[in-house]
Length: 186
Image 1 (cartoon, rainbow, N blue to C red):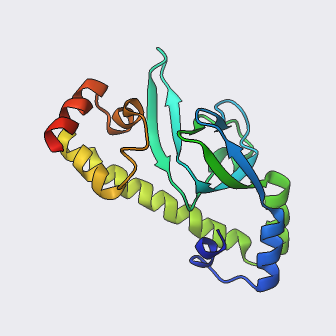
Image 2: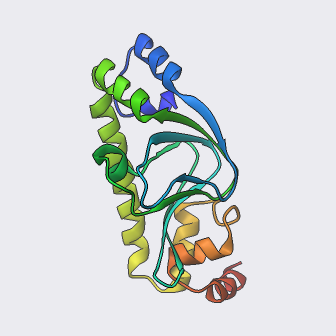
Image 3: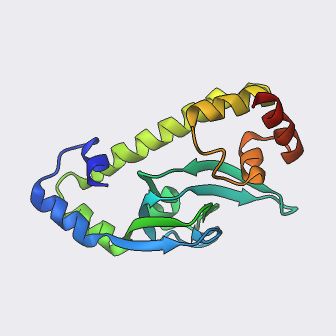
């Protein structure tokens, strides 16, 4: 986690020690929510093992996967966490996951104590958002087969780690279409 943070700004060895002391290791079982719709997001996590997805459910219970968050990345419903507003999405463990987690109070303490923590974290969130938008734009105007092939290029090793239904939801196609495409592409 520290190496990842250092990509976005400099922090002193003392600040590194403080950051480490504020992180708590948690384990999420597959299918467990890190944060839920209509509730306040109360923590920021750094995924050390596993995959998490951001999703929401339609009026008829259909699920829509907005994105996958992989190892060595932060995960947070930033709008809910930073604005103290109820979340509109679910943040769910797709696999068993291990995370380093900062509570709201720990994160606030880091913001008040580590000189450029807010700037560094803003850069981290901006980078994540830009990558998410870039991935979405890459997939947006493509046919289903091209979207799947591009997904494999952008996220190698993810397709075999997430359920077919979630991958189909992310790609905006039916599960049966995805099965056919996978057979033809393989």
